[in-house]
Amino acid sequence: MPGPFPGKAVRVHAEKSVDSATHQVDAPIVAQMLSRGMRSLTGAKNERDAWANFFDATDVVGIKVNCSGAPNIYSATEVVGGIVSNLTALGIPTRNIYIYERFPDQLSSVHYERHVPAGVNIIAAEMSRGSVASYDPNTYVETNFFGEDDTRSNMIRLVTERFTKIINVPNMKDHGAAGVTGCLKNIAYGDFSNVARSHNREKTNTLSFIGTLAMVEPLRSRTVLQIMDGLRGVWHGGPFSDNPKYRFYPKAIVFGTDPVAIDRLLLDVIENKRKAEGAVSIWDRSMDHVKPGRNLGPRFNNFIREPGHIEYASRLGLGMYNLEQIAVTNIEV
Amino acid sequence: MTLLLAALLPTLATGPADADAVKLDVPKVEYRINEASASRSPWIDANGWQILRAPARRYYYDVPAASVALAAAEAFMYGAKADIHTDTAGAAMFNRMLQFLRQIPERGDLPTMANIGVIDDGSEETGELMNLLTRRNLLYRIVTAPDPHLDLNIRLGSEEYPKSEAQDPSRLAQKIRSELTDEKRLLRVYGSEVVIARLVGTGGQVRIHLLNYANRPVTGLRVRVLGTCPEWHVAAYDKPNLKLQDFTTADGATEFTVPEMNTYAVIDLSAQPGSH
Image (cartoon, rainbow over all chains, first blue to last red; front, side, top):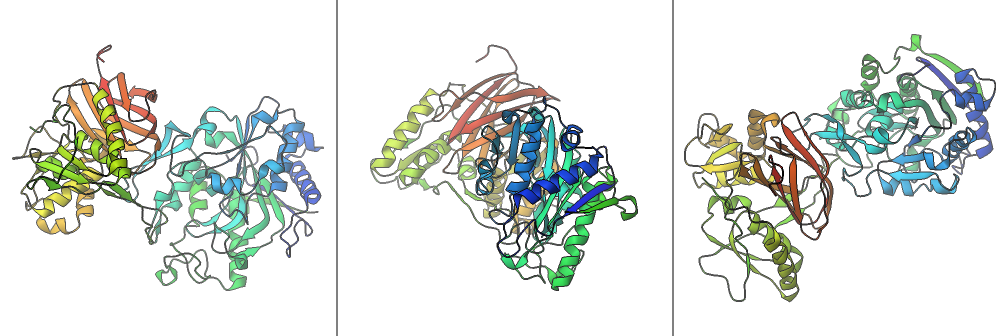
């Protein structure tokens, strides 16, 4: 990261990609969106060449999905299935493709296995919540936020020892602590242990911790492609999606290699939607709008949000934050 | 100097507790949702500080079967003279743990290894401070006067540690940790908030006791000990074939992963090859 296309984002929108009434995704349309997006991003003439820009048959590929809003909002099975199809078309054996997340209850509720060929690995890092057994003991970020005794966050061992490439597939979601959760949050907090310790009472350290984690090698250099699934989204209460009132349907997929650029665009998507719904701004830092508890209305948050984590990550060299430096290609399917 | 009494085994009580025996709490973890935080912070009911404060006393536990193994291991870890009161099901659990404790290699009376000296005035405040230090694996031993060999000496009521600070023992434990610094800590435990450790040894011979207060296994526990000790031996309750993983010695420290432990594990480290 930011990879070969810094400051570049391809947004593919398809009005018929999701039925807002039934929540159902149209798989053939999603396949078209993937094809158009990848070809536009890479400038390749065909789909195979587009994917071959990033992968070859020798790669072991991790697909970092986001299931924290499951079973309602997650990296769509149609998107992930389409990615897997394109990888196998390059000759990558299914045994060398991994769909992964941190928590098994969230991951298993999505049933990716029904949408990918047999042999694709579907793996949660923490088979027992809080266990660090599947994390690399030698690759970690050590810091003390609030006096917690376990001051380490370790990287998932598959990333350090098995994957040669990673595709990041976040959603378009509000996040009570980070402001939004997109590419950076998904790849950072989704690949390390013991990250919830960065939040305590109204304070969260997501401002600096997200970028700090994302730039740790080998995660940084192996994450070669960002495919943000914005077919369905969450404008409040994220990263969870308990309340259907807070779901919305951007009906878009955004492609790129620069996580900062894509997340910069996401800030506006979530902020504009919240504004339209009368919700407090993601940039609001007033304690008048901070309250503990779940299922708070859109005028309240659990934390003082830190949407500045995206700009912070840009200062670490992870991508382009200024809109003037971001070239967006809009495609309509 | 406080010594761990070697191979002092707990006993299963058959009659009423001795009148002069001190009753200990049922050791356990209480998981609680901290409503002000996204995280859960478990509360550990542990008795180590009481035993260390009065090691010569007789203690007893009155525990259900599910807590017998933990109680017996806790008593053993701190060298307590302790009786366990329980029911028939608990007696079977006790005997199983006792069988394991008997198999732990004898190392003699190894001194407690600590960073901190606590000058114990016998007060409730100092007791609660020791409880917090124990639960946070901030290794201490009780001293009668400041020991210059330790990194830090604490006397509640002193200018540095006024009694008023003991009103918030958690904050005081944090202050002590900050003053000590994590870099100097003889032992760190990563990957669990419910494992309490005890370190005994001298020079190149170190014994680490790890006690899991939860009623479920801990997996992937990472332990760091200051000092370079490339040789190891592990004895783990209900895990006869357990091997340490990702064992490293670097930067003046030894690190390893305990892949899975139930109630209790004892790890011997040595600087000398073939010493186990």
